[in-house]
Figure 1 (cartoon, rainbow, N blue to C red):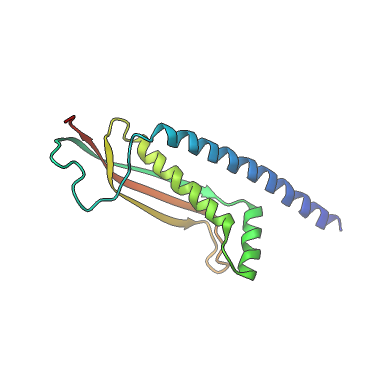
Figure 2: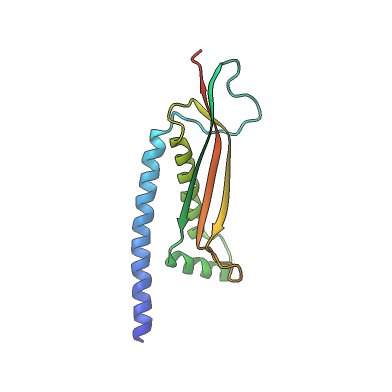
Length: 150
């Protein structure tokens, strides 16, 4: 019985601290996204500059590795039993994607636009036979263009 109470207590503590960390990260993402509203990151097939002169073109990238906490792992396991959307992993991927794009934008402070943006994901640290997720890595990359004023 003591073991079950201990497990429940650890699960509760994991939930509380995981929720606090996630809320803090989302707050940081929103603040940093506001700072970079001026810098669009787009995927285009046509030339974005039109007839504007391109002064500089630089490859920029950003990556983020976000780990899942034990509470979310347990909730995802339960969701796998019953089916449906695994929201605990959706927030994990959302945070990692937004963080990677922000880190990419931070590499291009003077750029006008980032074009041909690509986002790739990978699972790290998961067990292949258990099909569990340990962490997710997201890599965002593109070409930062600095355009001449028209």
